[in-house]
Length: 141
Image (cartoon, rainbow, N blue to C red; front, side, top):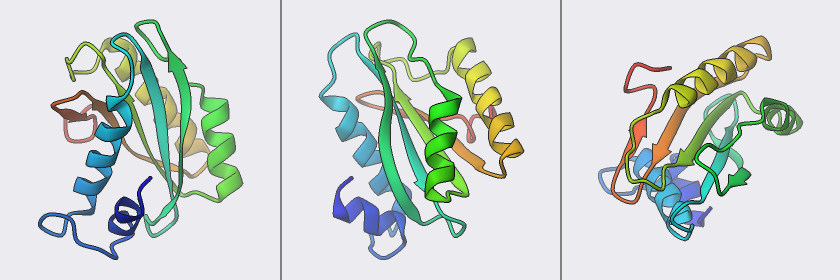
């Protein structure tokens, strides 16, 4: 993640109209932009108790239509970091940013796992070259 995006996510820098989320979204779109036309990637951003940035990392890649979200790996990393919150994201190479039924089921499963571990799933973002869909804003989380 770029230093500017990290600072913005931590509230230490302004991006656009002082919107840290704008820096995070731009970072994710840039990160997913270099993928092939059928390649999906699952990415996680780990946050502390004040929703400050701790770490982010790619958690899986796939050349098929669905990236497997592995809860064990995701929450093991979150626990190792002492994270209190997560934002997860994956791309849709098709350009359609609306969630599939599998996306919605996986999000609900990860939310439940997080609740059991006292780690809040803050959002699940679906990223395309032009748009980003927020499961929270869309009422799916």
